[in-house]
Amino acid sequence: MDSFILCATPRSGSTLLCELLTATGVAGRPDSFFMQDPGAEWERAWGLPPAKGEGTPAHARAFLQAARNAGRGATPVFGLRLMQRDLGRLLALTALAHPGLPGDLARLTAAFGETLFIHLTRADKLAQAVSRVKAEQTGLWHRAPDGTEIERLSPPAPPRYDPARIAKVLAELEHGDAAWQAWFTAQGIIPLQLTYQALAADPEAEVARLCAALGQTLPPGLDLRPPVAPLADATNADWIARFRADRVTRG
Image 1 (tube, rainbow, N blue to C red):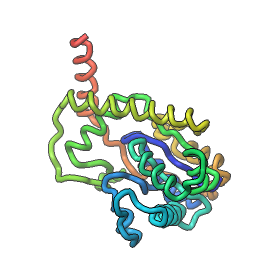
Image 2 (tube, rainbow, N blue to C red):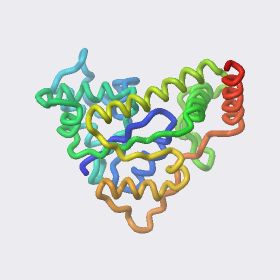
Image 3 (cartoon, rainbow, N blue to C red):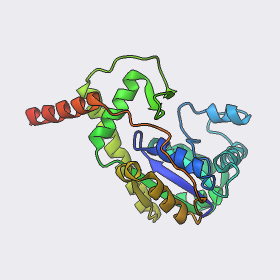
């Protein structure tokens, strides 16, 4: 395999998986290179001129090449994390760069070579929704096992139970996974399936399985300790229980 695309939805364990794959030294340096917001972050980082309007074929080709370089690093494989909401931007760029090809899969193959699609899902969508809402409210998205904050997107704030927001996010996450599956079916793609639960239970085994599918072998003696810690706590459990009770009450 020349590349992989990690197809996910927010709070499904994608950051943990990307960090673990990067730590192998043989499976790329995956990141969200095609996120829509903020759209120009990578252009600034790579020294590319910003796209004008919908962009040009030359800009699309330059962006895709820069993404390939960043997502491969010094490894044999290009890695990309792609949220379902960002699929449209990637497809628009590949359509500009490879206009003569017949469909999404053909254009992605032209851009990235032989590609493994990985579908990362979290079975407990309510827990996933609660995790996202709590992160939005508190500003803390990722923390190291020693308690050090890794990613904070806003100043600290206390969490508050918001059933309307949880319900909205839950519906978005369910739609996101369904949309991924519909796109896989339409393109004739059979993705490698990976779950949050399996990754959390045995990260080394799951990473070894992905590397084998990519044609790569984990270096001997590699210590793959999870670089991020779970953020779920009593607040998460309380919100989940209250939301389920509210559903029962509403009938």
